[in-house]
Image (tube, rainbow over all chains, first blue to last red; front, side, top):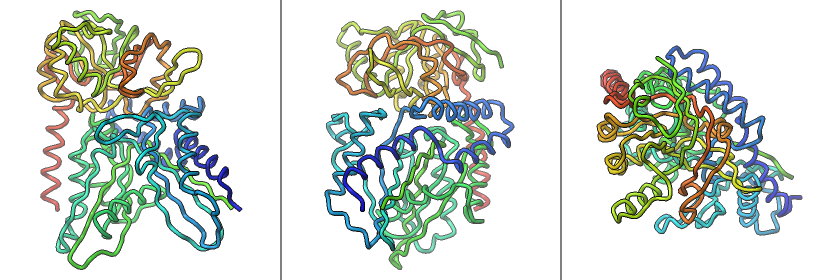
Length: 273
Length: 195
């Protein structure tokens, strides 16, 4: 049995966890990159990142002042009964976290730029719902920073351009340069629709970052040949991982979305019920 | 690559000594400003109004901090934001000052490199290192333009050995970013041939 209050407190607790500590998979790949890197400026930046992760965990404060825009992924077990205003519970969880952790109020009206100070508003938090077997409720939060979101890109490619997908991903990284706080992770959505490809790209960023197939590794290796390096100051550590999610698409189209995520790949998951 | 410990208000000699690639730490007073505060500051300058903070001999920090109020304000997490967003407006401010330091991330445009010549330097702080940065902030001395919202307001911080900062652009027209960009362009062209 899952109740309104459980959802509110879980969302708030998950945001606290995501903001203050990175998953062990993420820390492991950053540490490995630091050990491999031989550019001095790059090493200094990676060292500062590792020290920062350590400080945030010990002091229990958000590792980055851009505490992001709240993105929530929900998986509802089909036997589960949610007999309350589920959406409002998620919203209230974000409001609670913003006040108590605290989080920086980032959500503003797109045109007036007015900031209500709560991190909620029209379509924020962004909630993605999926269904699963069983009677559990799986909640995942991903507070997403703007630096990396701003340089993400989507292209409606042609079905004849399948071979050009890695090239597009590398181009996105090249255009982003130092702006998304490299080293970065790439979530790549291939297929689906215009909007669906972007959703797949974001979902790809939820994966264990240590696990990549050959195709994904190839994209990482090519992007690292650019030499952008940590913070755009040079070095061989630009992309820490690339993750591709596929979706069926119209026979006439090939949407491809590349969602960039900074080194602070903040995510946290809990299962209720 | 040398290491420098700078104090505010900045001294011109000290700024002229810095070379792109050096490491620096700053002690004294710095203030945050991002898009909205830059726009308003230039508006004030154009209207001849006095700013509540001082760019001249000062250090502007491209940062939208996460602040907490408990017995006064405290900086919780305060890393740098992307400086490129301030590219267009920064030369307008630089032409009004004699000496100035900028802390941010990601580097700035050729116009800014030009405008910094003989008077200023750009310091790169590790992006996302907000918890680490907050530890060097000893005191929040003031906040101006709070109506712009927490990230866009101007926060005046007293900092101690704020860094490590990497001199990304020096006062002699050298930019680590443009040197690296040239290499990245070459690498990119080579990669394109592989595709």
